[in-house]
Image 1 (cartoon, protein in one colour):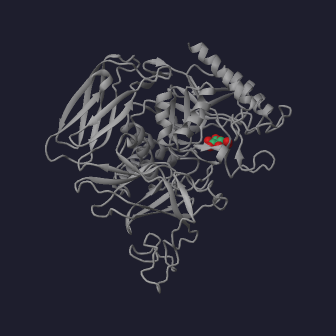
Image 2: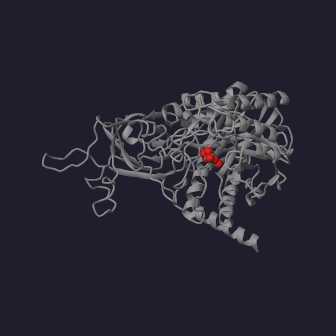
Image 3: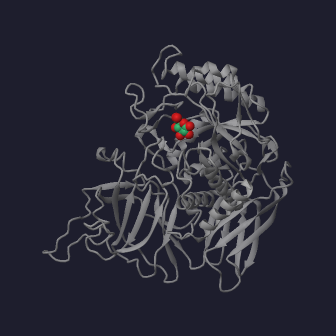
Length: 620
Ligand code: GCB
């Protein structure tokens, strides 16, 4: 009976997801490999805490052509007209970038800010298409061009694009306005309560994408999995996947795939929007952390051409192990927030990704958990070229409203976009559908439906979620038995034994196991310390306490069961959190970083680094 109920509710979630309407067009992928015009830089803004630009004085949404709306022209038609808003160079924000770090008045701001950019545009051909693309806007974006609404998007960490209707773009002075709102709501994903800073704004790149009338929207090209647990062939490697056009072609369309380094070229002919591809590559080098080989690949049609760099590898949960290219791997990971603590801001650029991933490398990691939401595309691309394995997650965090179908739809949209953007990244090996969600049948149905969705979109990676375990019961054996474990490929759990409840010496009598015959991963463990604060190891927030915690944890890990495949301790660097208000040691910072907010290494850094180095040596 329970099973029938569960299946019905999964069916129900699936049904909802197909009928719900989408506010933006389907995602165009591989933006870095396309012809784009950047709209980054200085944008004028209006801070609008009362939403005057959006609602009238009865709090009714303003009609499209209302002169008082902040997306309409700010220039009075004649001198006697009343205009109570305007954009000026006196008030500008840098895009990409959160608003919080740019001016002191924005530090704690949660609400609406209107962004405006003027730009000229050279129209090339009437047949071509132009899209407006945003890497991410936190949290809701309403986008208007020359007074017309292009669309709306919710979700603070995923990209979106709108097609610009024909005839709307002008050659001079286009007037682009984005209403950005980062208010938190109970029924959002994430919800009201998170342990990170709610940075608002246009936080990632904005650009125009110029495309022919028929273009390549997306593609998924990967090494075919062999029989479970087998090493993929590097000779005559089977490559499979698909290419998706933006629409059905009128006549047969030829699509070519080229890999110049291998002297490879093959053409596929299609009359459909989506075409399955498969081909043989004579001899390839597989992608791995030790050898992150990427191939330059060109996909082209008569009028479109995109370039990408793709690595070929297989990954799978096989019995009690995780196999990369058919061989067991151990994940020496670290969890990372998308933040540059030195500047108290969100990370977004290649330089930022370099800082975060090189810190992880210094710790001797071969894996990162990008917590708790999809990070900028520069992170997964850099991870591809550095050979760092990636866990990528959606912000289904703590207690979101699992009973609400719209919340499910929102979470599923974010999952779908995360997978679509990054499914060609060899580094990404795990899609995570959430973190520390409280066990209940409603939540398990919700999460199970997300897992199904991820599997259905991508059967070449593992799907997981960071689970919770009750480790404060004083039991010697803590068993991971969350019912969600039945559906994930990798059973992952967070534990803070010795920080939340008890002291680190509890580790000496504690063991871990799971009821599932699957690989087991510790997705978080950690303790807080203020860099430079030294005391005896019993003193909370001292570097000595954190170092002791790591020592005890590492001693405990030596007794992990044989299916233990890795860990991503919490966390690379101290990060901003309004929940952390100890006036001596925290002052608005979560201090569980191994690096502090200035980039200094705490004592615990060296303990974990030494442990990882010893594991790496054992592996060699
Ligand atoms: C957790 C959460 C993480 C928090 C961390 C903490 O379990 O997953 O987001 O920041 O604990 O520091 O308490």
